[in-house]
Amino acid sequence: MGKHSFHKEPYDAATLTKLAIFESYAEAWIPVFTSRPEPRFSEIHLFDFFSGPGNDSEGELGSPLRLLRQLKTYHVSGRLHGWSKVAIHVHFSDAHQGKCDELAALLSLPQWQIPGVSCSVKCLRFAEALALHHQRLRDADLPKLLIIDPFGVNDVTDEVFARLVAFPRADFIFFLPSATLNRFRDHASIKVKIERPEDSYDVHRAAFDHFRALAPRDYFLGRFSIKKPRGNIYGLIFGSGHPRGIQKFLDVAWGNDTIRGEANFDIDREDVSADAPLLALPELRPRKIQGFEDDLEHALRAGLVRDESDLIRIAIEAGMALKHCAPVLKKLKDERVIACDFRSPNIDNFYKSPRPVSLLSPPA
Ligand SMILES: C[S@@+](CC[C@H](N)C(=O)[O-])C[C@H]1O[C@@H](n2cnc3c(N)ncnc32)[C@H](O)[C@@H]1O
Image 1 (cartoon, rainbow, N blue to C red):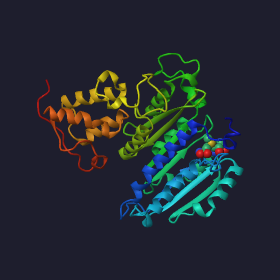
Image 2: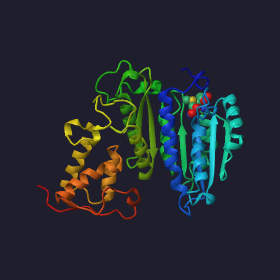
Image 3: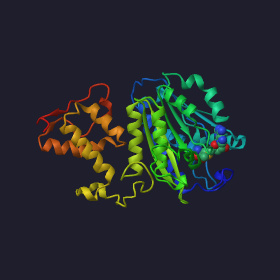
Image 4: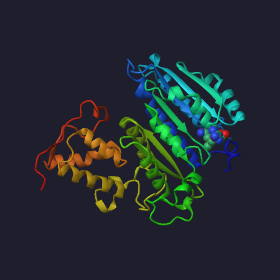
């Protein structure tokens, strides 16, 4: 699908996967700031910097209307107790005036009028939108979600990435088109010389490593690789300064890939089935899950895990959902190697009051 025909044709399966991930993340993000009866912040801001016109040729919803669909569903449900105390601002922008006009027309329909939510559509290039919103983006009292979905190869440069990770209280997801991934073909972490980066299984991991090296050490990044029907690999990179942000992204990623939580295809070329995580035999289980369980067991037996926060950090750094800690904790509790009074770590306790994990038998 060419750039110019993108919104004049149906979204392909890979685009739908990408859009589903944007939407699922928004679904997880919105309640963090609106569910408490006394919300901590009085405003939240969602940005969609490459919004497009709102849908494809078949009327399938694009990113802007998916963000609004989530807000509308929450509003109708009435289950977010702080909703009426939080002003929700949604900022859409796109470089193409015609697409902005189409989106503005859709947003004026009665079905997209959502109490408590105000939307704006501006015809702006990404760099112009970043400049326009500079103050908001730098404001630590404004929680922000940034969706960045370009066609282009030069939109999220290293300099732009450095700005994104410096925005306080901001979670972002950006899309790396395969042409962008091209620049990672000579990256040191790619062992085999890649002639055609779009065929490579490793190139998105290399891109991730590149961005990892640019971000502060305590910043959280996640990734998800998407294979197009023709075989090109595209990537999503997620960033958050908060463990809760990355934990929610990892839950979304594992919801889309139950085998290793990072791709819509067999990225490790293991040919295991989606049921395999449930199987007990180690050789039948996905390497990523088995490897994580082995590493975690080793860390617990060595007394390297003092509490719930350590567990959360280990899981997040390995790109695992927190529930993946549960089988190892159960096994070592049953064997009386450790004691802890929880089955799986809870992100709410990360900073406040992490529950202890005690080693009962000394390391061998
Ligand atoms: C991949 S499409 C976005 C699709 C959209 N998220 C959706 O769900 O339909 C990329 C969009 O970026 C716009 N665009 C291209 N260059 C841009 C730039 N420098 N800044 C902002 N928008 C740009 C295009 O007009 C196009 O609508």
